[in-house]
Amino acid sequence: MKDVLINAGAAEIRVAIVEGGRLQELFLERTLGLEDSDVKKKNGRSGHSLIGNIILGRVQRVLPGMQAAFVDIGMDRAGFLGAREARCLADLPGFDDERAPKIGDCVHEGEEIIVQVVKDPIGEKGARLSANVTIPGRLLVMVPNQPGIALSRRIEDEAERARLLALGEQMVAETNGTLVPGAGYIVRSAAIGASLADMREDAERLAEAWRPVMAKWQRAKAPAVLYHDLDPVERTMRDEVDAQTRRVLIDDRPAFEAALAYIRRTMPDAERKLELFEGPGMLFDLYDIEDEIEQLTRPRIPLKSGGWITIEGTEALSAIDVNSGSYTAATGLEETSLAVNLEAADEIGRQIILRGIGGLIVVDFIHLNDPENIARVLDTLKASLARDRTPAQILPMSEFGLVEITRKRLRDPLIKLMTECCRSCEATGRKHTREAVALDIIRRVEREARAAPGKAVHVRAAPDVVEWITARENEIRAGLARRGAPRVSFEARDEFAREGFDAAITA
Image (cartoon, rainbow, N blue to C red; front, side, top):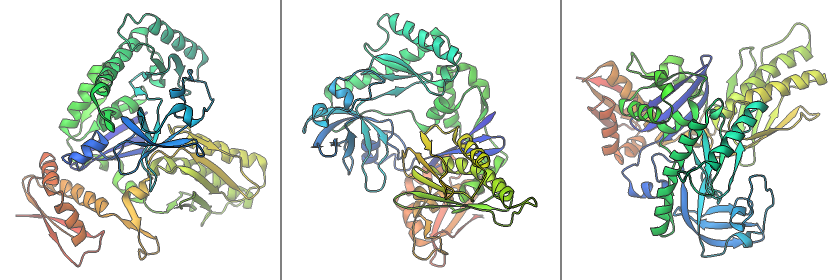
């Protein structure tokens, strides 16, 4: 069973998934900048992520040598559209069609096309795009331009797969004009046990979401956002609340009401799981989540055995090293190595998911000689990544004890979101960004105000951090007032380093 915790703070929405008392997944969506019209135009919704946005773009360049095209989507950098992601534009129907046509057969320079963001801009690279747009629902994902029924790989029971496939085909055959003509559907794992009526109701909601997209397309001029995914709270209800969810705790009344409205509309049986958290204390204190989030930006992760793992990132790959530390098994070196490797393998999958690490990952395990022991370590690593929704592939262990993992990179990892390069940071090479420190300050103000309702809070912090806050002061104050901290003042003090600050109650 799992608990879903939603901290809808004054400047950021954070979602924590806790299983067995341990943090297993973490989602951050920063909400500052909602009043900025440029942010609204480019993102189409709160926060910084573009994933899921459907955009009317204009093809800027077609590069046959790369089998790709660059598409203007209204951002600072053009989006990247590969031939495989554009193949639906070349009239190659079917979910299982793996043929990749020439990019010139799919798009032409100056052409307006509808695309969807499938990967956020990362570093100097623009957003990754797909012309095969989809709209996710609670039970189904609608694919407007590809007919047919497909099933999520997470649905493993063959009898249930056959039942759901038959229901999907029946639903499309009996549409009665309420569904999108010619659309296909992917049945999600949340549909396990669902009835035909449940699936049809979800498909009809998806049709209602798609019709405004088509209407906007008729009058829009590229580039223009035609559709955006749900806001973070509703998206969490859709994607995370399932039969294994014990309770959903939300610490903000407007966010709670938004979640309640979505649940009543799409999954009324889950309403009993929803709770408004009003204290005592802060929501993330329930499982010491704040301390764990802080640890996620540090390279070393201690293991209970006395060993540790170290995670370091480069432009090319992420390297993970396993060290036995102080642990020794009385029975010998192989047993010591196996015990530490098994504990590390279980933790590595969890850390990869929590930190949002993608791309190529190389794990340097402690050397093992016994093939059965190597197999046990690999099985443990696979099991620790099994809960991950992001596709990943694990290769066998090499003779040097290295295991290669590839994990789809959807957005910047947590460490890049919260820290930046630094030449003098206690040998870590990174320091927290001004934004990350400012968000820490805002959360501290909320904590102090909750402990002393009605009292004023005075913050002293580094000048560059206060400068960042001042530039967004009106929005920050409005958010803090909503969170019960209407009286707050900020003072820049030169004696504070970037990450240092204090927040105190004043008379």
